[in-house]
Image 1 (tube, rainbow, N blue to C red):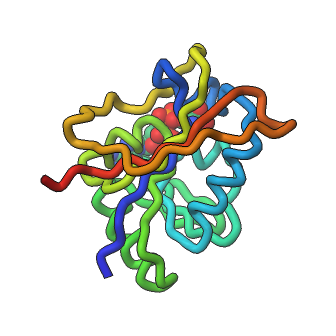
Image 2: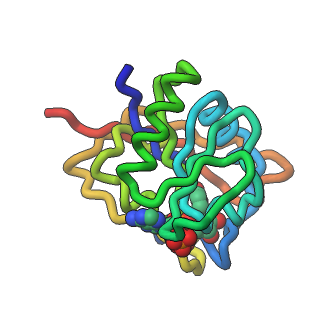
Length: 171
Ligand SMILES: NC(=O)c1ccc[n+]([C@@H]2O[C@H](COP(=O)([O-])OP(=O)(O)OC[C@H]3O[C@@H](n4cnc5c(N)ncnc54)[C@H](OP(=O)(O)O)[C@@H]3O)[C@@H](O)[C@H]2O)c1
């Protein structure tokens, strides 16, 4: 099996994905979607994102990227280069029978894997907001919008949002 690389990200209008190692908005519906998209799959994430979540997420395998060879985290796999993270995630995908590897962020990790990413499951957050972590700029010559759905705002969603699937153009 050759699993696809799928980035799952919520991004503001001005490209912000994080502030002070957390999310700059409260969107409960999007967290549920994140869970549904990632369940049963290996996820590659940066050490900072892993620490902001605080634990390996149940039902998924976490591969944490760090340059610190001494880093350990109970219940998570550690890699010190993107190539090692990918090799570990591929092995885990095989073991889990998963056809996707999730690129879970944050900004540095989305950037490191962008050229290898096949699909971006994007949540467009209808905000302009300050932040210190950003999604890398996308050259839309390489991407096509394969699906778009307006988010249905629930009581625990503080802002409007839309779900967009971007697929890498292969032509
Ligand atoms: N909105 C969203 O969808 C979303 C998703 C995920 C995260 N976030 C947010 O994004 C923010 C975190 O993003 P971030 O860019 O600050 O950090 P990050 O990408 O989560 O993690 C960065 C860390 O990854 C490690 N790393 C990066 N490149 C590496 C490489 N080539 N080789 C080995 N290790 C490497 C380094 O760890 P060491 O320092 O340990 O060496 C680096 O400090 C938080 O605010 C988080 O809440 C948002």
